[in-house]
Image (cartoon, rainbow, N blue to C red; front, top):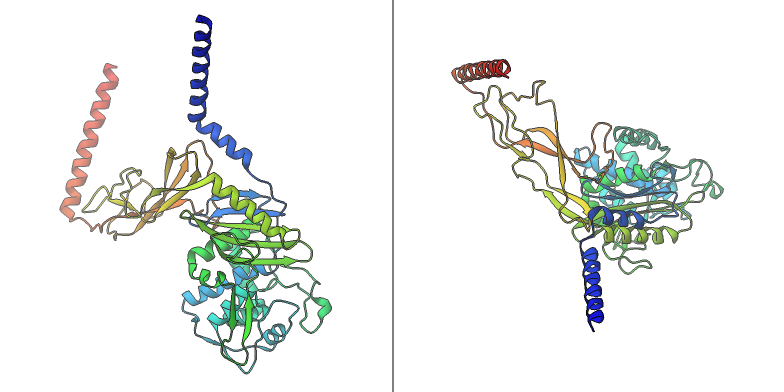
Length: 450
């Protein structure tokens, strides 16, 4: 009986140890488990990013450039919307159709809506036809509107890529059609070079498109719509994105973006989805077959949403307490009151609910070489950025420009600082000199007696 009692105590103790080991798994062990769960994709180049701050959540051969076909249109539409934002054109502007844009629009061996030369189309109509049905004629009409010719528009495309630090790209047209394509010769449809981009490059383009022009989603989430509804030119546009609600590969939360297909490199898909207050962008380039791109995308969605969650780190307007005090040498207020200029949510592993953070302040030109500000300073003036990382976890961000990535939160002056009167500045100099003198004296005697 005594032995049985001892055995019961032994197994009870062992059970408690096992339970404790299960409950209190170390963060490093959990991170290792997440790393082991990272999937492999059959796509030639792939990446998943957080759409809010450009944080990289998955990548595989992300710098390998492949033929992307209609995925190129994401950059085309971004440049068109930038022209709208700058006031160079507006969404209601009536666009004439050139001979070339008309000829392309009449070729139904490539994606199109029918355009006429005796009809004008609004910029918004053409954008919608591109984002829903990948219309190539509409794409050319928009490029010609913005730059005068498609060749000049391509120069703009390459300039944007260069400014964003994208070097391993080849852009030859606005549509993604093959370089030798001739709308009057069906045999040229797959001849000549094609636009080539990497998953990283497409991620940067898509990041900017959604960040600067989120209204594009009102078009990309439409399954079907009639072009020129109610007219004799009425034409049904069908979205190629089969992950939208009600489609073959429906996936809850998907509301964009664009597909592409190359005879040489296969199917590509840039998709975006929002779940649990987290919007991500997935890029799958060069998947074999048109269906494979959806299977590979689902694989990446499942991984990211099971492994990560968003955590609010900084709220816009909060006091920037993580930044050391900064003196305003001639200001009525010193040190400068500082606040954060944007919200920041980090994507963190689901097991790490209280991440330890590291803050690094990166000053801009408002702060001089001795680390001081100069009045006057308006409220809202950005004086630098705070870069935030999670301890023991490398966080990588997209390169959105040659100079700075998206991982920084702007630090602003919280209230207007005026120039102090001359006598206040004089008194400040005197008190600082006296203070520095006493400090030097103290150090002198400390050194003697030590």
